[in-house]
Image (cartoon, rainbow, N blue to C red; front, top):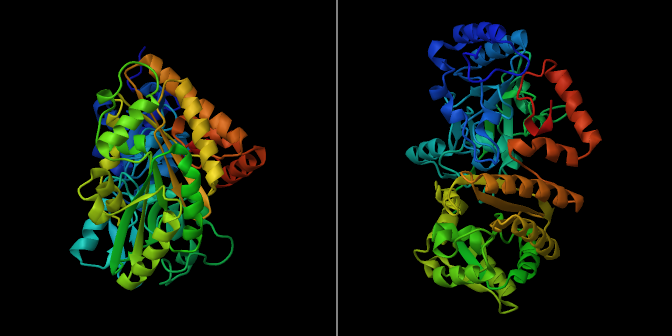
Length: 514
């Protein structure tokens, strides 16, 4: 007999799940327990090269209070029902709102969306997990606070809690988001509520200003993990600078990447350029201006000749280096001289200011990100090939030009083997670089789905073998990436899991932890 549910949690009978749902309804209300196919549709669709059925939830719960979450984890422990937690569910390149494994119950926290505090003097915010960057941006604008956000690419629809817990990044001087996190409230699997750092002290008013508290620092174990449910999140905001000067530097040859990174590194480590520098390949920028079908049709990776034509038609370099200067006009003038002198030595760089870039949509998009404004322009990437398939591959390397050239060559070779385009960017932190490769494919084409899966699998295998660890990955490949970090780290993760969540109810499979 067919089940009345579209999916069931692993190891849970229909009778047991029915009993659990009855208790969930008493805890959060009838209308906040979603079980029909229509209700669950937003939690099923992914952009990954696997059937959506592999990630179909059994139900979704819409909690609004900490007390409701405490009741939910109690019910989950009683019936051994696993839950997959999301804040806004807009983690598109890494899995969207769908759970890691079929049958998990999605705990959707989007209704927990109160902005609890914004302090314009100490420059911090305390928010619930459902708060979006756009909501917080509008709040800051409404109150005329002289504060800037740091936001990821899908800024308007993502939120600071989920992005930071997955160790996402932004493009202002506060772009290493977890570095600027300060104080969390976490519901543990046993229902206890932990406040990290200074938040554990009664009457504390330093929760969002001093990260460490006393004893072992705990905040880190709740990032990229399944050890608790973060219900309040504090982080620092950037004071609005008196002046802001975004710019782009274009290069014509792919091997110029060596010079680019060698020029940037001392400027970043020395603080002359205070924000993460994006080095975007022409094909990463092209979707803001063009469609792939205008230049190439049929199977296989795009040709170098087509890339050259796109560069010519849309005034792109093969590498487009985006950065900005912040501070007083006097500070910016001094640093601008240092930057232009450094990049001007070889004669290869074409430096464009905001005035010189004019109405260029790629520049306007990047400038908006570098000042923390709301934009969804990067989603133009998903229109490049059509068919809605996207996975972000994200290995890390040292900020050295030779490393960059090696990584790009490896990525292009593997992508070309599977008939896929190299669409990538390097983001230079201080001493590290994130290499973001957007693996784009057509989900309506079974052959391309298979190729994309095999391609991504090989990217992880080959890059890991060369010592390039992946810092973030979609739900399909979490186990594979966890394995690349070796058995000792996995054993420690598992030991913590057993101690904090002995019944394994919180997000089984997150980061390969069960």
